[in-house]
Length: 71
Image 1 (tube, rainbow, N blue to C red):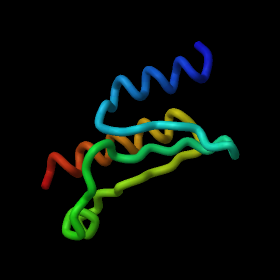
Image 2: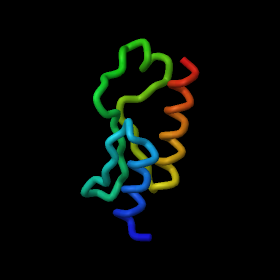
Image 3: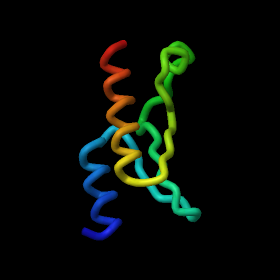
Image 4: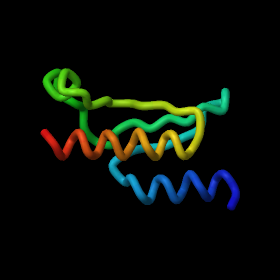
């Protein structure tokens, strides 16, 4: 599977996030359509996250979803 297809699959798995690869090759995801409150940030949620590879980004996205559900 090519990298664009993998990123497309990741985007489908996490529709609340916009996912992209920077010109430096790093992966990024930012929340779509909502800004976090200061309290949510204080509780460990992130507006934007980054990762070295697809697997790491997927794990960080899962962690964010779990943290959000726990609130």
